[in-house]
Length: 284
Image (cartoon, rainbow, N blue to C red; front, side):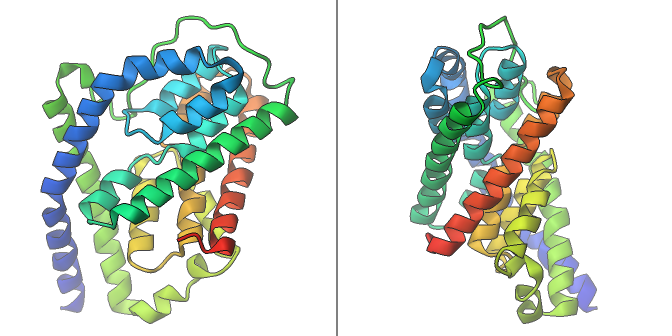
């Protein structure tokens, strides 16, 4: 019976989030339709300031901006530092989850600022250290990829927001039920002492979760933090590494496999380092 109660509770908790998720995605779709073209133009024209522009614009809720950045990199439009800045600053589904769970605005703002600032600094560092990899690229026409789910944003923001809401609700439902079952079987105190909440190990493992090229990764990371199972540093580590479908698009569009692997390893190292810094300084 306890297992059934856990499933029922997870279902109810998820259903309560649907209105907040839909409103959040509706606003995000409106923002993207108003800023998407300007954002892509800005990042193309950024030049040496690419990491600054990419890191700042990466935190704006946009449909598949990390995927678009990967395409622009493959098309020799932006540098590797700009790409890394975008990947580190973007948060995939973190923002809708935190807003729907009514997390504090101060906390959300701090997370976004930290990710953007760290992304900018790391991006400039990459451009400085890897000049051969980061040669200024002269662009060709590359069309941005919206999302892995083919949301067809051009067909209307309401339809797109509804599609996103249904898709993300499904992932939240699965993760919420799984967490509730774990909490029922193992207990909250025991789960909070697992490796995901331990120094260094938590950040390292969370970074591996972030490498999953799917929105489920950022949902899981955010939910684990909200349940107290994962530390703030570990969450930030995973979210910095996690770039949605950006890495998937990079491997699909950029023919230089070795270069893609190098960028992935670099992203992982920088993301874990960022999480360790956050945890060490107790920023949250």
